[in-house]
Length: 124
Image (cartoon, rainbow, N blue to C red; front, side, top):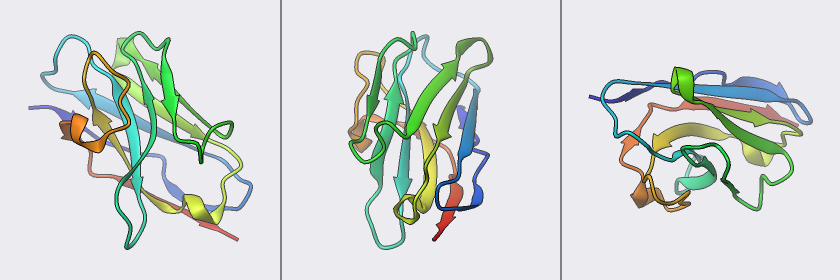
């Protein structure tokens, strides 16, 4: 059974930064994409960023490009999301997920294992 546990969320003022972490444990396929998604109250879950197994390819939502950076530590099976210049529109529960090996997909349905989420709240 695969487990993903997000951490690093919290309350921050607009313009501030947070770094989310998500270690993966349990049985996984040999290679896989990792992704971050978020869901604000009353809204659908949306794609934030994804990173390939090698770490050389990344994919970002337009709304976070230039502000967020996804990275991964393969040795420790952990993915990170560095979030800078946060604004109130970034307030949401953030989820990490395991995706396909062949594509740094932005599609929610391509991701099969999810964490429980961590709350990020940005005050104005």
